[in-house]
Image (spheres, rainbow, N blue to C red):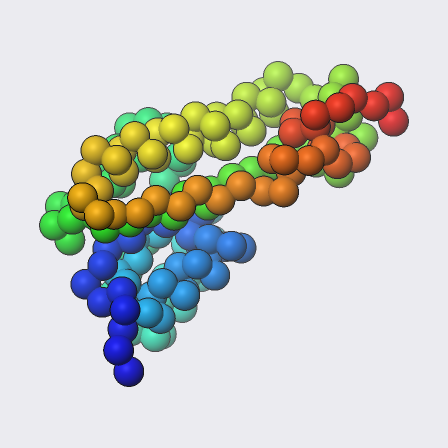
Length: 167
């Protein structure tokens, strides 16, 4: 079977759980070398076990995308190890610590929680895009994934709401 992504090196943020992990598995199954990062050591270990079990070419790294230096170091380590970066999928994202609780109402969200969400979802994406674009192959591709919460409001998920409610 032909592997359409053979010899391609792809960085994936949030690549150890959810949509990021599913994307990592799909790209790997098509021959790509996947270089995944996440902040959660438990999901990194689980993803590592999976990729080892299928003998995939992968790299798993603990990275907090809200930290510019960690993102820059991670991308540099990919290029150092593999000689290039052909693509990236930015799937890392958080909804906030208070989502679904009464503290998910706008008036109850702490500044720390707001900063946590913005630092991962906005600053983190900026840091990733900038680092990736500095080194990506001429015909490389970058995909950015957003939660549905990024385009519509939901009850008690005020970090993203486009309207306000007293509920």
